[in-house]
Image 1 (cartoon, rainbow, N blue to C red):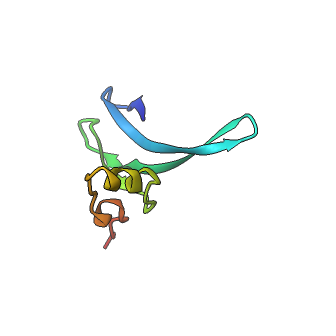
Image 2 (cartoon, rainbow, N blue to C red; image 1 turned 90 degrees about the vertical axis):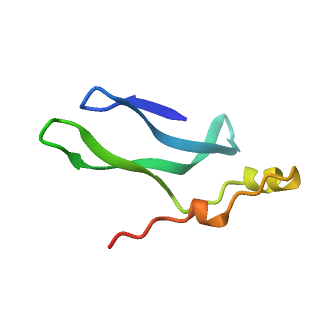
Length: 81
């Protein structure tokens, strides 16, 4: 989980990632959810939302075995019209 202070002074979770393994000495990760900035209001407030990247995390299968079922739609990229 990565939290950052935005230009309006608020702190937001800007990414939620899963560690997928190691490549030598380097930890590999993939983003599952990210904050998408949409703009800034006249007041300076940052506008945006937390969205899925379209990647279904590997840990979802382990949760299902324990009885915790996450709907596949939870990980779908929202459509922009």
